[in-house]
Length: 167
Image 1 (cartoon, rainbow, N blue to C red):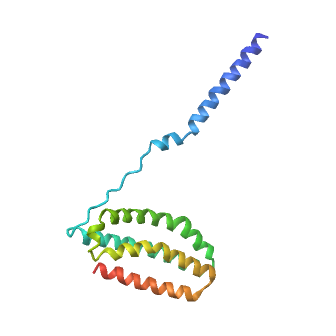
Image 2: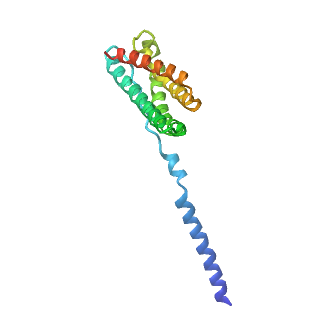
C-alpha cells in the first residue's frame, strides 16, 4: 500500500501546483495596478497660443457634435430609439467625458486668463454637449417633435457661436 500513499501525495502536490499556476495566470489585477495612466499635460494659455488652442477645441466640439448627430439621425431613420440610447450611453458619452474632463482641467488651470478671453464661451458650449445628447434622447424616446425642433435650433445657434470663434 505504500504506492497508494505516494500516489495520493503526488496527486495532492500536483493539484496544489496546478491551482497555484492557474491563480497566478488569471490574476491580471496585480499587473493592472502597476499600470499608470499617462498624465495629460494641461497647457498654460496665453495670447501666443489661445488661437491654436481654440481651433483645436472647436474641432473637438464639432467632432463630438457630428458623432452625436450621426448616431441620432441613424437611429431616427431606423425608427429605433434604443439604438441611439445605446450609442449615446456606451460609445459617445465615455469618449466625450474624457475630452470634457481634459477641457475642464484646462479651464480650471487657466481661469484667470479665460475670464477675459473671447474663447471662454467655447468651454460652456463644450460642457453643454452632454445636455444636447440628453435632450435628443428624450425627444426621441418621447417622440416629441416640439422638443426636437427646439433642440435642433439650439444646436444651430451653438454651432454658429463656435464657428464665429475660429474665424
